[in-house]
Length: 135
Figure 1: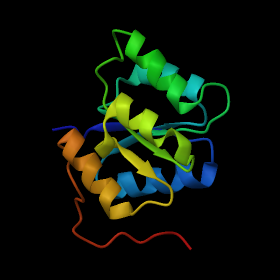
Figure 2: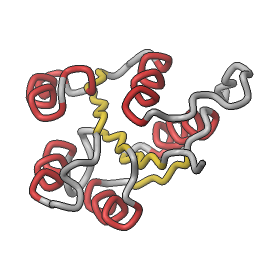
Figure 3: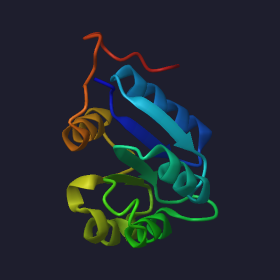
């Protein structure tokens, strides 16, 4: 069985790389986008099992991405987990995608990965080895 595909929409290349590395280590297929607009295009073509969405991005921010997805029949049912350092949007995000799918930065990696696995029914870590983060 093919592992679930996750699309990481994050403008910070370091955070995008770290999240991608963690998800690949867990056994997921991962695509990424540096902004909301290219993320929407990628979501339309890749049809991911989950979108991991940063809220503060150039072009289309996370809330605008969510609103656009809800209006698109091809994307309206794609689950989204949002991460943000912008505390004033937490309640808006919770209303749009559910409180359990919103993570404030900094967040516990283990909690995020557990939620990803719960939402996707994903593989979890395939190797059984601890994840080694880059220095």
